[in-house]
Length: 314
Length: 286
Image (cartoon, rainbow over all chains, first blue to last red; front, side):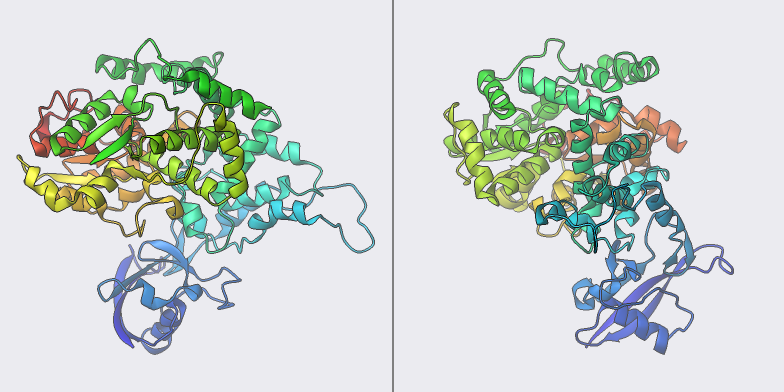
């Protein structure tokens, strides 16, 4: 048993003008999870505390809350691991509207899934029992299939925080699950849609989703996989794909990134508004002597790097 | 103490003040640097989107060259650090991949063995050099200076590729700021993303990310912000006039590269540190 002060963010939009933190002192029983503690507080100290829960087995994804600043499944998290100087901070998930206390509105989260058509599209008749896959094919969608829709990844997603229209890590991981499904017949159409604004190229690589996911989805890795697929499919008419191509070309020719050229290539040479948008920052940097050297030098022993490019192309 | 010095592209391009300040600080601290001039870009997580094997092979070539020198790698870019750590894990955990990569390196006379350690300057100062020793070099303590630490994603996440024992709870930058006599600003933005990777894809979203953290640091009375990643620096400093418009505040928050902050405390000349090379003037802090 350890005496711990739980600082819980409380908010009832019907009564309170703004959220506030309320402290609860609790003797944490040995082996208790964070969910056990929340239940004890609700049952023995304050019945008005509101939180979600269901399976208590890390399967349903209902009980995700922020523990000391980052999302965790309350039922999967040992309380003892989260005590910092005798305290623990509990808050609702981020990037979501609070309905009451630790309960957030998940409607926007689920609506993103609908946008990626999370179902199998095929006109081939099903077999007698089911549509079968090889083990190898299944492994390509195995990771994304482990999603329990807890919204932890989206809670800490930096791109979502700055752009609510971003499809977000959970829906994009789900999209990869169908793009790479050997039984699905509309992968190209899916990837064309995902390559548009607010899709795969809007992920900022911050890694929060990988860090927060309580299962094995690793959403950012799924998004990277979708980008690789998009490039292979030749869906190149967007800044993201142009950026990758320009980047690879630069390393192939000089071994290092040509920062004078990459912004222009990323925007696209016929994208006049895009190119114009580069001018203010370009001038600003030039005036401070921050512009990259005009003559872009290649690295020493460039022949060896070129050899690697050629060899791996084979 | 000697390291194979991997400069990265930005320190030789749009952020040359990072290069000059790193060299100046290393010299002052007696850290010997062997600059690698024959190594390629780490790929910045971009090349791996096109071809993961190519990206890992280019990094393995860098690792092999450092191993031939019998030196560990010192990075001064958080992104290079994170990308290299991921490449090393990919290779070390997959014997077949390692064999394939070494086959590709053979014609150039290189072989990646797996002994090299990859460290950012921040790790080196905390773990190898030691903050107590660093304190003895401080000539101009950053007394009263409120410094907002901004780690950058790649030094922290995914944590399996991080050198920190706990990515969420590390206080490496804060400890360093204290050792230099400064006062670290406590704010959530410390571990958030600057948005730079998507500045070419969605500028509004990218700069909003920077804006959220810069505004928070400013509200917590930061005098300046320090980052160990030059890509974060590009967004936070070079685009700050645009960020001002997004957050509707004149931020005027100077952004320092990690070695610049150290250099100020060590009493190194501001020109050598390139403090005049910033978009947001650093005049008020040194």
